[in-house]
Image 1: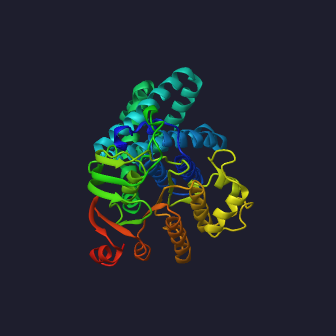
Image 2 (image 1 turned 30 degrees about the vertical axis):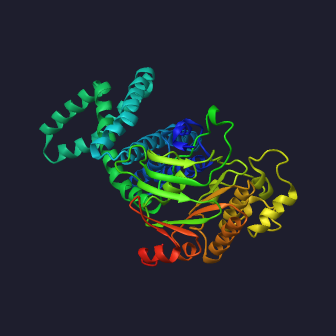
Image 3 (image 1 turned 180 degrees about the vertical axis):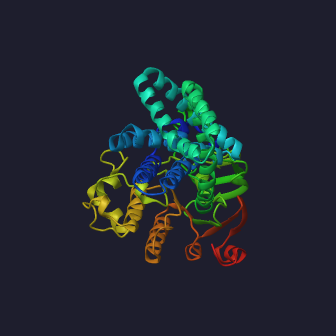
Length: 457
């Protein structure tokens, strides 16, 4: 049966997943810290510009609503910490950063970035400012009076250096601007937003390029099967890809193109390649993501998260571990009574976490969290386990332990697809797939493929 026949991007309109919420919290808080620090530290403008980067990174890699959630949550916190002024500053920073991220993701240049910033920041900001000044007349008068007072120092200086005639002309212009504030204030905000968008783009662009060079964008997840698939068996493997391609929304080039590949049951398949070569995207398609071109053939439903279906483990275990205690996390999402305490102990023992069942997950190290994520995946007894760079953040001993666990799962009948940069991990595979710029460069035994790669993964 063809996965692409029913899979679409409807899930992208669903609620935020755990990884999106985690990134929204972390990056939103980082932006807030920079905004607050800018109030107290010298050269605060630099910190304000830096605060746009977390939002740009968030929206360039996640859904727009993720940035909205981050902005709303940190905006409330900013109001509690510093009042209206801090909240307004954070809102502007969030808007400009989001505009930069949207433009980057869609491949737009400076004009596109400025246009997006004007739509997201200037239009609502100008409307809110004018409406506020019309409603709160005393605040308007106080603000305009403060603006006039602020100009007195420079004007007095001009008068002392013999430019009295220029002073009178400038005073007249200033008074006109204050009298016609409903025009000059929005125009001033227009200039600020344009400059902020261009400078923020220049500041954020190196960071965004580095992110894309280091990590692929999070692939879209496969949606639940429609009603006509409700009686289909859960059978994710074998799976065959024919001419498969994938392009992320708004991207100008394909992340994958013309991929032909078959993954047989009970095999340990390793995907290698340079940063940005499409490794994570290919693993996501194997796990059920519908391609934009080509077809994916398998005998049943992928069954993501279901018992006997497909399980996934990612690079960042903190975004996958949901239980307060280790045993709770292993049980998370499973039907009641589907797993016993003895079963949990066995799964934890398999990943080197024997005796950890009652430990709080917040006390675990990064390597222990990763092994817990694998134990939780194995608790579903998956036919297909997709490991997307799950060893990337571990030390050599931790990497060996995780690969040992993956190989042991293969021995129990689970098909394992593992994405890695490490040649020693690839050397233990049954089949190695080498990607280069979104295309399959070589497929075969480790020695043959790694020789093509030049010995590296």
